[in-house]
Image (cartoon, rainbow, N blue to C red; front, side, top):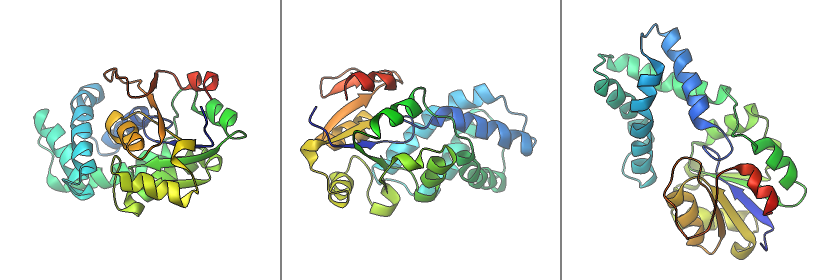
Length: 226
């Protein structure tokens, strides 16, 4: 692959979102004395959260709507009567607490160590600016990246080609020499391909197979490719 610049998605690709999120909810439920079975809650919450993130990615809802309603819908499905005031508190506390946990996807640190001397590395994320910065800093991988491009700062979200074009322009990267690595087929892969970038799909969450680009299931596989 004729690659000089590599753009990584953060959540679900390098940063272990599901594990860190579970740790966060466990702590918040304990602090607020909520007798909620964590595994049962997560079974309901995770697909709801993905649904709301897709709506947010498509500019259909605001981040405030996302943060409140993903919790409210999960509690309703569990038939739990949680007051709006507490849902708002949990929503705020979740955003503040989540980046304090720093579990990475297996092989992420070793991969970054391997890639850093060979390529320019960047983050291209749909996450919120301050939250993503805290995740990178607390997990101690911020030093591997030359720049971080987030949708909140750019004003549009992946797969909108504008955010990819913005990242390419502001990193002085040519599309054909740039590679996007991410877990979302729609946001990362299709978005990158639409502007002429190369792409590798880190499909570790049961996504459907496709022939749009190379698919990997383990991050360490990239050492044999790059």
